[in-house]
Image (cartoon, rainbow, N blue to C red):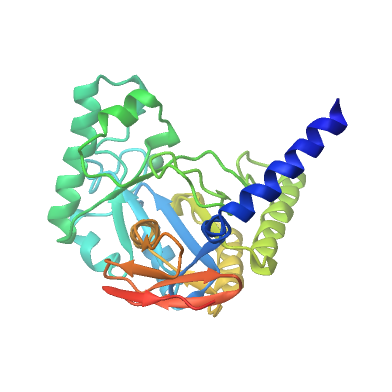
Amino acid sequence: MKKITILLLLITGTSFSQINPEIAKSAVNIEMLFPEGKSKALILSYDDGAKQDKKLVELMNKYHLIGTFHLNSNKLGSDKDFNYLKKEEIKDLYKGHEVSVHSANHPSLVVLSKIDIIYEILDDRKELERLVGYPVRGMAYPFGNTDDKVIDAMDGLGIEYARTVGDSYNFEIPKDFLRWFPTMHQFAKAYWEPNQPEKDNKELELFYKKIDDFLQTKELAVLDIWGHSWEFGTDQNKWNEGEKFFKLLANNKSIYYAKQIDLVDYINAYRNLKFSVNKTSVTNNSKFDIYIKINSVVFNVLAGSTMILNY
Ligand SMILES: [Zn+2]
């Protein structure tokens, strides 16, 4: 019985491709590359807007790294929980980086009513936009908490991606940008509990192993590391550790250093490419030059152009 089924499949497969020669073309494997044909992207995102962000941004700027900073506008200027940045510091400090929503007051959104979820997001978005002077379109969930109800409530609020804290330990591009799982927390889970040097060392080992995997991989890869500058506190060892991993990732020609929203815009533009049926031409209606790879041939599809694909 098994033999007959396999035989039938073989016969069907053969005749199918003979009758429809174009089918092979539509099975062409088209891959996305990042800007300038790069195969890796790095996202560094930090939450809460603590005063230590000043030192962190200084360190990132030193290594030409780009960050995404998720802020709680109603907390700015207060000394409750910890020292927050002042509103008047936001625009200059995060120049060249992305400012993004983290809710106005940092509640766990999953326990709120719909109207309060909307308020928390929209109020934050509006105030941050007033501070930075551009549309704020990204978000990180406070405490990383989300569910279907929260995501439903976000519909129409202009939030185009939202990051959780569910570490994936992989380098994949999220299918659903409102359920964005980062690769991992900075230093993995080292320093999560005080006085656990053995656990800290193990976690640091895992962290640097993942960074090395990212640097070595030949696959398309996004490394997305999240954390808080207040976690460094006043501990110089942690700051040194921070500088060490920034150095490892800095100035690498195969890495696209991106604000999270820029990566989202680029991926959306790639997904919106219009291919001809037989994949021999493509139209790029976006403002980005989009890099694609077909059968190992790399094409730069210029912004606003139609291109013939010879491969
Ligand atoms: Zn937070």
